Length: 416
Ligand code: URA
Image 1: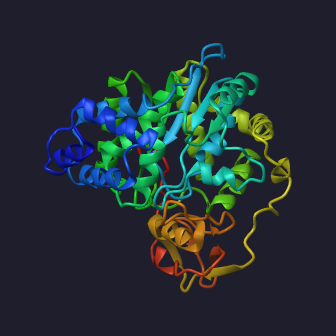
Image 2: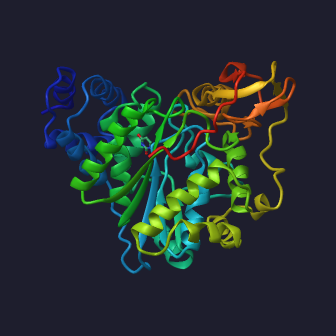
Image 3: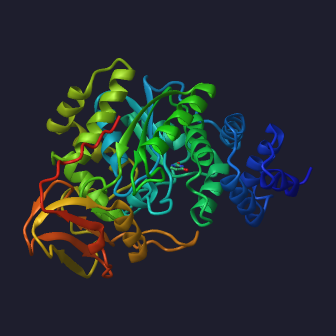
């Protein structure tokens, strides 16, 4: 059967067999199915979503499209984390060293930016020298030595996802629940961890814009994950406004380092929440142990060890004077009031338009550009007060902010 038949079945709303999905994953991984046919299938799959059994088949086929990391010999417990993607989401850069500082072994495969949501690969690649192309052998050796390792999507682990992920990003086919589920879970299966914490983002800066949509994605992740034998722990978190203050690759790494150094706020809260979840799930502690690891400097020390192991210039911990945009402009409040909306989608799109994300698969990313927010939902601001700094080309982000004459409660970051 040719791949054209697989596309036609999908186009007509039929069911793709396990064999067809295996051939798809194999062909995506080894390059024998051309991008235009894969893109046609992806669009058909976006319009006629895969059923749960098809999604489970695709997940396994994508995980089997390359090697699986065998973590045997590494200290237990083995933990991994993933986010469904959001604007300003730099949780991984804080959470990985935090978990390792609490005694867990963390091995993670991350992605590039997808749509308006940033990707950890792009963020960490902004750090001079940081290697995001570790081989499976290097990952294992490093995790054994220091407790954590991260890599980008490699040609050896879940290579089918590497190809499909890049095509979805530029063909308008990201926001499909079965495609998101198979993409995330295939990487988790290939990564070999026993316990996985998943951050399901909800709001305008995420693929799931409403709580019912995020709940549906969480349900699918849990069910397909269970079917595939993964031990998953999930929370839904707020993405109606960007997470933290910075959006843009290098700016987000700088913010993550500040949190590792003790800065408080919503980013730290979400990291402590997921660290607590992983520690409780593995019987190794709770959220208060994560707080202690941040306050004592243990997580920061582990982060430095991690950056050094992956080739990074440790100067990034000493000063923020690296990978900076030449031009910085300001947005100031036109009226006094309380911030009632800070739209994550508008901010995320502006950063992509500034050159901080991709519109084409091979687009160059300017790591220095981005937006630093100086107000969040619930804050009182006075006329003329600084709302945001734009690092790079000027964008119209004023419409991201809405003001209210009456006070607005701050929004909690963990929804459920
Ligand atoms: N993260 C992934 O790895 N894949 C998706 O499809 C979305 C978020």
